Amino acid sequence: MTVYLVGAGPGDPGLLTVRAAELLASAEVVVHDRLTPAELRDLAPATAELVDVGKHPGGPADAQTRINELLVELGRTGRRVVRLKGGDPFVFARGAEEAMALAEAGIDFEVVPGVTSAVAAPSSAGIPVTLRGHSAWVTVVTGHEDPAKGEPEVDWEAMGALGGTLVVLMGVKRWPEISARLVAGGRDPQTPAAAVRWGSRPEQQTLRGTLGSLDLSDVRPPATVVVGEVAAVDLNWFESRPLFGRTVVVTRTAEQAGELSGRLRRLGAQVLEVPTIAVTEPADGGAALRDAVARVADYEWVVLTSPNGARRFCAELRDGRDLAGVRLAAIGPGTADVLAEHHLVCDLVPERFVAEGLLEVFPAPSGRNTVLLARAEVARDVLPEGLAAAGWDVDVVTAYRTQPAQVTPETAEQVAAADAITFTSSSTVTNFVATGAPVPPVVAAIGPVTAATAQEAGLTVTVEAGVHTLDGLVDALVRHFAR
Image (cartoon, rainbow, N blue to C red; front, side, top):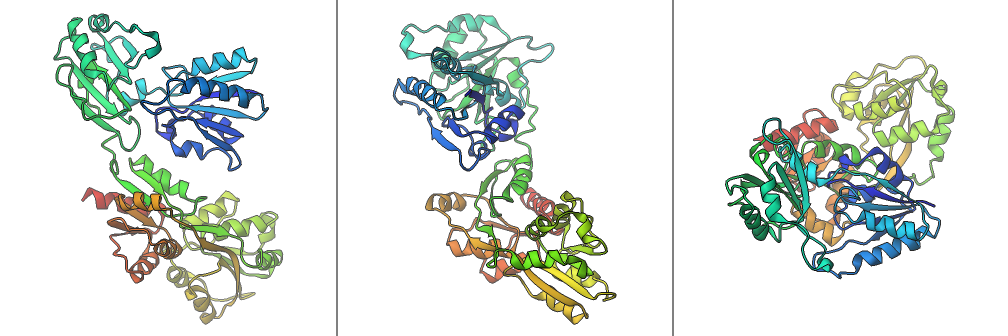
C-alpha cells in the first residue's frame, strides 16, 4: 500500500488541492502536524485513525526520526496512510526525509504538492512576491536551520547583496540577527519589509515597516517575513473582507454546518462549529413516513417544512414518478433546494418562509383534499391546524427528530470569546440554551420564529434576517458589523 505525503497548504482549508481532498476522503490513517486545520482532518472518514505528530518549539530533537519510523510502521500495515503536512511537503517541511525513510524501507509513496506559505501568506496580505519593474526574482530561505549541522549554512550577508524579494520562513526568533546581517551585506535598512502571521487564516495579522525598523519581538510563530520593494505594496483584499477578524458560532447539526460555515469563511470570519442538535431517526424508525410515501399518490399535496424533512422524504421515494399528480410545497428555498437536488420542482414556496407565510398562499381544497405534512417530531402546530381549519385533511408524520448535543468546557470557553452566534431554527436555540454555555454578545436569528424562541429563552436578539435563508442571515450579520 502507498503512503501519501500530502501538502495541507498554508492554513486556509479552501486552498487544499483536489487530489489531497480525494486522498483524505478515503484515508484509513491520517498522520497530521500541529498546524494542520481541524477542517482538513474532518475530511477523513469517521472511521479513520487520526495520529497527531505535531512538533512544538523546544520539543525533542529526535521527533522527526520517530515520525519517520511511524510512517514506515504504518506503511507496512497495508492501510491507506495519508501524511498531512502544512504547506508543501518538499518546501522546508521535511517531507523529503520522510520519503527517504519510506524508500529505504521499500514502501511505495506519493507526494502531493501543497500551496506553500512562502507565496500564500504574502498574497493574503496583498503583497505580490514579484512585480514588474520592482522585483524580477524571489529567494525563499529558512530562518531555522538544522541545529545538528553545527555551522550555519545560510549566508545572510550574501542574501543582503542579492536584491529582489526575500521571503524568510520560520525566522521570527532570529529576526534581529537576520535583519542586521542583511544590512551588513548591503541591503538598505529602508527597504520595505512585512511580517504575515497565520497567513491565509481568519486570525491573520500583518505588520509592516522597513528592514531596519520591523520589530517582531511581540510576534509569535508561525510568521512569514517579506523583504523587498514589493513589501510596500498593499493590495489588501484578505483583511478587508466584511467579517474578517470576527468569530462566529454556528449551531447547526454537524451534517449541515458546512453550508453556513462556508459562506461565513468566504467573508473572512473565523467559524466555530458547535452543533447543539443531532438529527436522528424518529421513534418508530421511520415506519410512518415509509407508509405515507408508499401511498403518496393518495395525497393532493406534500408539504415539507425543513431541509432535513425533505431529505428523509426523498430517501423513501423510488423516483419522481411516485409523485405523479401530487404537488409539492416547501416552506422556504433551503427546503426547495433539497428537493431540486433530487430533480423535484416545488409547486409552491411562500414569500415569507414561515408556517404563517405558507398558510397565506396555500390554495383552497379541491379534488382529494388531502395533505401529507412530513416534519420534525417536535414542531409548532400552526401549519397543521391552519390547513385543517381551511378544510384540508392533514396527515402529519414524523420524518426525523432532534436530540441535544453536549458542549465541552473547552468549547464553552471558545464560545464565550466569540463575537456572534447564529441560530437557524428554534431547536438550535432550545438545545444551545440547555447546554448552559455562555452566549456571545451578538445573537443572530434566521427569522421571526427562531428569534421569538430565543427571546422566550431570555436571549437578546441583535440580528434578525429580513430574508429567512442562510444568505439572508449572513447578509444581516455583515450589515450589523458594518455599522
